[in-house]
Length: 204
Length: 339
Image 1 (cartoon, rainbow over the protein chains, first blue to last red):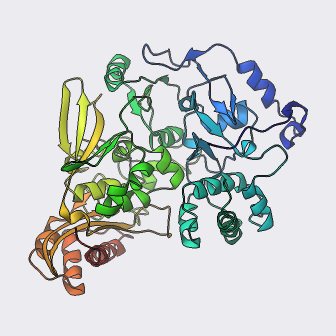
Image 2: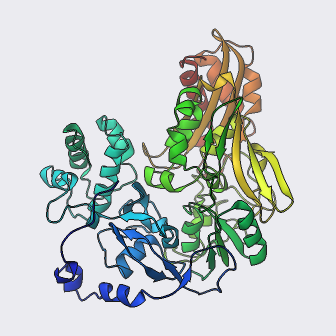
Image 3: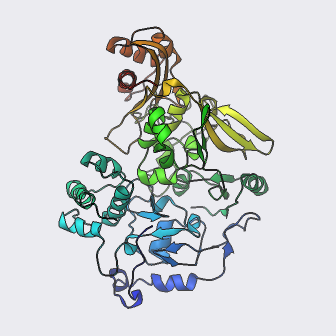
């Protein structure tokens, strides 16, 4: 299973986003109301909203969405979880990588509607409170980032890479991480960080 | 993106009924890695989405008996690490492992991947969407509008199977491996079930490049069946890309060999990255039958595989590249231990 949900009171936390004037948390609260449940026919009319209940970072999160919404937009715009980044929005860069039921996916190419009842883990759900996940610490230790934009996706992919048993060599890590692009070119540090965590045999 | 209705039935039969009830503009969606992507580009414009991923009991992998059977909703990543597939059919495992990224392989299904649409730049980027520089004609996107790739930036375009209407490459890896192994698909529709060779699922563009697949509206691919063959052990999927990983093929070859010592009893060869559909290289197979496999006979077979190839302005390199890809694939496969 994925790491537990983040502890602590998020509402009292000043994040970059809230500091920038975002009202995502409020938006999510307002949107939690009755929409059409996701089920079989009859089809709701075009433009109808859907009520879904994904389990986001361990917490059941009922939310009403437009069916067009991507998981990435749900996380960032409706739930205020801005860790997953929008790079290409077409599944080509990996910046939006999150886990669904423990498997890494591109959240930008995932219809949010598909996550009804499923466990979604984002970078915000990886740490144990204020204690960094070993992979987060390894990225710091190995200078595995420059601008940091791709980093949440890199870390979510890196954790999955180890869980999949693919961190067996530098070549295997590079292949398993090829879906995550880093335009700053921090690849050497990224591979170092993953090899470090995998080499210590720690459960991630 | 245009609005659509969305339902998520829990059985194949219910999905087919939902499709029929929805009427024109209905589409099935599985992993969504191709369809949802193209909807964002305003190239796909479904009015009704029937999400098939909640259908229960349609993601099994069976390897007993005289065939492999992959149910349509099995993720590409799951089939790629199946132990029997890895050991006895490396061509299948490699075709999946070398496709896309692990994120996308976790999302995409082995059934849906068969229906992936082309990556032709003019098809993908020419619809006038936000990420497009401008609007380009495309007979696949807008029938009768013309083809900007012909005489345009055609480095990535097909050298086999193209027409005066379309030169778009069939993008898949997995379908190429399946075609080499004579796989077929099981299809469910309102009229019941039928099966179809994977090779026949793909239409040549001819004058109607917008018609890509030999499925009738409302039909669902429910499984892929691969007849077991001893040649599976001596097989490989060799893929040449602009970068080492996570790219579409410039040229690829699926090869499986039935050998008697150094002599080829039967070779199965299919090409990807260079043709408008997964391309079985029958002439190359005939060329090799009964011959000793050497570097020389392999390259002769590789050239035979490109019989009839025609280059545009910038993709002539693909003809020699594909021939050598076939030759290299033959030599890699021959080094593997037979059953």
